[in-house]
Length: 259
Image (tube, rainbow, N blue to C red; front, side, top):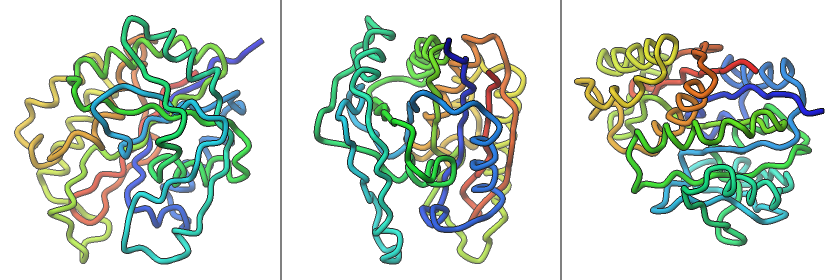
């Protein structure tokens, strides 16, 4: 008998979180301790943002170091979790008629996924499949795809989304490690209101006055659309296990859906 799994969105922020221990990484680790061990993890990372829907379908996904300018210790990190080609095919079947391609060799697990999982499951002993974010789809379509993925939660699949609600690297303030611009706080708080009160209204956030500043590119914001879609499917609202800001223009607010 399988266990219905929760779903979560974690703001992964700086890749250095992989090597550090702070209140955000502690929340990720605590989440894994609080829930049943999943059969497999479906990860939706901001860093696989392409012009199609696809899933990793290889048995042994590689660890991708998709960044530069960080210390050698970070490039040495490997996260050798197995893949699950059967789940990849099941995902495509579950969301049909939405087309999802099988990626057998081009991608793997990027740092949006392994920087979080390194704290949740440090032994890399849970299979991981990663879902690409299709840049050609609207926010509404991403929410709908999240809703379509809901049946997987009843089969022991943990759906984990990784990004940042506010992610504007051009406006980073290196001397403001734990603070944020007013516009960043305003948008983050508006998103909190939607996710904790009416997740179906998630697409309306693109009308917020600070949207262009908070979401200069959609890649880091759209993973949360999948959690909103799952919330709609479950007729439930999200809770916030941890919140905060980083470098003025990054939000680290996280969201969780119960089982």
